Length: 140
Ligand code: IDP
Ligand code: MG
Image (cartoon, rainbow, N blue to C red; front, side):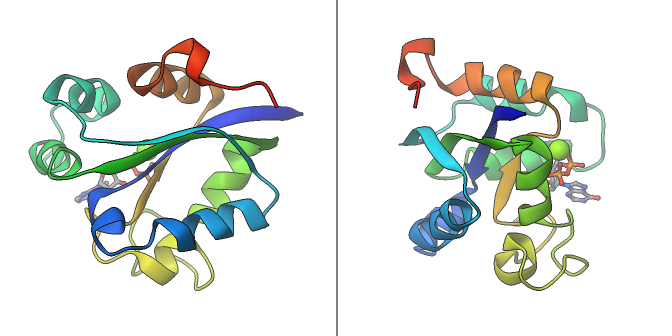
């Protein structure tokens, strides 16, 4: 089923000049970009994005990292997009991520693991709404 998902190129990916490279990989896998922009996440947006991680030992670091610089937020569409984008992204810890995955090739540390991708259709919708107004998401 064709569906949309949500992803974020994290601050270190933008700072390292890897936006084009990561987008190329995503497009090459057949995903189509429906919305995209560069933003600086507010505290509020970061808290909403990571609400499921409240209380975990790495929560504070997660918030400070995602608000530390410009991020590239996007909505992409494709067949089984949530599951297929997660596969392209790779394991959470870059040291354990397969070569050829985005994190395996560009992740630096568990915190600086290059990219966020929604893990369910429900979270994709919830996370998209934190960063995009409905009219910003184009029907392709
Ligand atoms: P995911 O990004 O692969 O979905 P989650 O478990 O949802 O992984 O965690 C969200 C983010 O929190 C990860 O992308 C990673 O940056 C960070 N994170 C997850 N587990 C740890 C940890 O054990 N130590 C430090 N940071 C972590
Ligand atoms: Mg997650």
